[in-house]
Each structure stands twice: as structure tokens, then as C-alpha cells.
Amino acid sequence: MRNRHILRKTTIVIAVLIVIILLCFSYFENNIKTIVYDMAQAQVTAMATSVFNSAVAEVFQDDLDYSMLITIVRNNNGDIAMINADAVKMNQLASQTSSLAQEKLSALTDTGYIYLLVRCLTLSCYQVEDPR
Image (cartoon, rainbow, N blue to C red; front, side):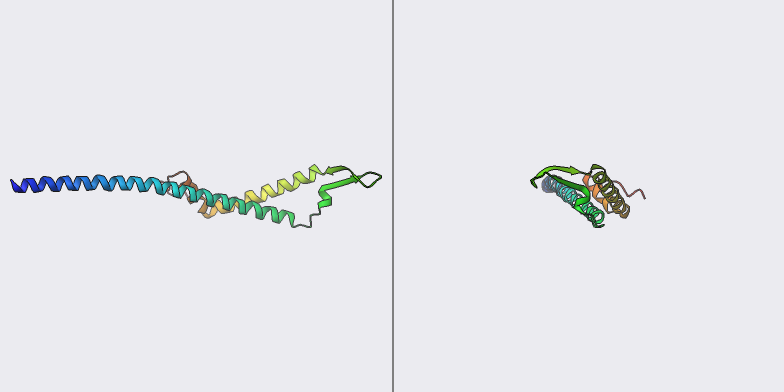
């Protein structure tokens, strides 16, 4: 009789401990997923910003003169009458910058680092292996 009572108490204590452990695991897993998601999102944003900034710097380092993009027309008194922008040249620079940024992002993607961050952003970094 006494053994049954001890066995019953032990079973109840083990069951309660298992429930507590599962609840703690669930709580921490949800919090960790949120933290990983936020960190991955911040890292991807920082990397993209860095890539775009370096692309802009590379495109604009080629002896680009502001007067090639903007022409200021003055009247007889020397006052500014009109400012003309060379839209074609600006579009060419934007296109070059965009293409260079895409190449740099593609190079980052090939390293697998972006793949890991994207997997974490989709909250399935535990489930799927790199397809390469």
C-alpha cells in the first residue's frame, strides 16, 4: 500500500515537472524565435545598406562632376532663373548603381550567409538544409 502511494506521488511529481519543462521550453522557444527574427532582419538591413552604399560610392567615384548632372541658368541680373537636370545622365547613373548593387547582393547570396539569414527570417532555420 505504501509503495503504491509513493509510486503515485512520484508519477504526479514527474508529470508536473514534464509539464513545467514543456511550458518553459515553449515560452523560451517563442522568445528566442522573436529575438533571432529581429537580429536577422537587422543584419539583412545592415548588409543591404552597406551593399547599396558601396555601389553608390563606386559609381560616383568616377570623376563625376555635379555640373554634368545639373545646369544652372542665370538671368541678366545674375539671379538663378532655371535649374536644368540631365535626366538621361541621372537615369544612367541610377541604372549603373542598381546593377552593381544587384551584383554585390548576388555575390553575398552565393556565400550562403544570406541564405541562413533568410531561413531565420522565415523561422524555419531548424527545418530545411541549404539546397546547394
